Length: 306
Image 1 (cartoon, rainbow, N blue to C red):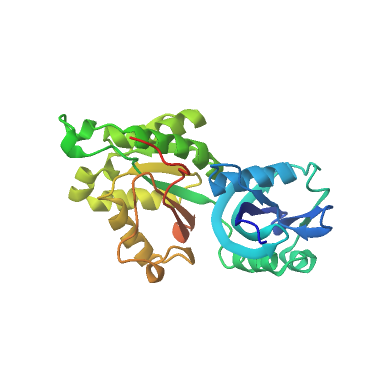
Image 2: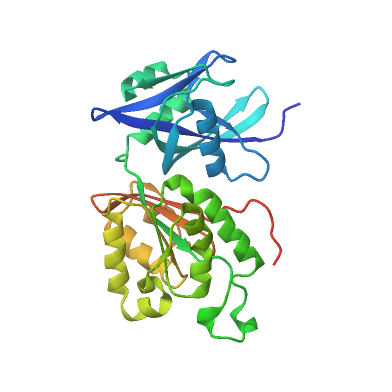
């Protein structure tokens, strides 16, 4: 009897040695193979968080997540298996463990020859289609704040509801893997509450970014576009919380003028960029130009009551 669907996650760790790209491949004595590190998700664990945990456990490396890589699917001895992968900038030294007894840093060409499986070799090919750059902007839509009709005070002061609080906690658990060193927010309370747990986890203050609020954006959209362009060109990683009346329009203009090579692009989605409450766009850029745009609809993995 075939087993249940197995869900796993992993990464392709990379670094530069004297300017030369190197990829980390690991040897698993149980299978006597060479592959990229990966492992099964724990219960209710977001795939991205699982990917970082598994790669860390199997390598001992310090990681900063980049763009999403293709999902692989295959039949394993335990049943059908899917694995989500991410690019991961790495440093540190390998630590042998129960799963892996060796790690080699290889050039891409050497990696293609060393890897045991064709699916892993396809990841190398995909990795090289886009400049290897960090995520520069995490564009967050505020988490759920309930129905405005049920709120008697100024809309600016409407707070997160129970689900929204859970979404904010989930963002704080996952987004640090991208290495953000700056957190800013539009002015509404629900926006600041969405990224406050993240800022606290990082030991940062939530800065003001009023130009990303709906009222300010409606009157001066060019200001937010200019600020976003500056963020994309900066040597830092900024998490910015905005609103549903801003993000789709902002992304339309950005992705139309600078179509990403990977991720959700104009040719593969609906007319308007998605931006559900509590969602994140991870924008990778080189010289201010977006080269990858990955959309994460939610990091919640269990139903949450209001």
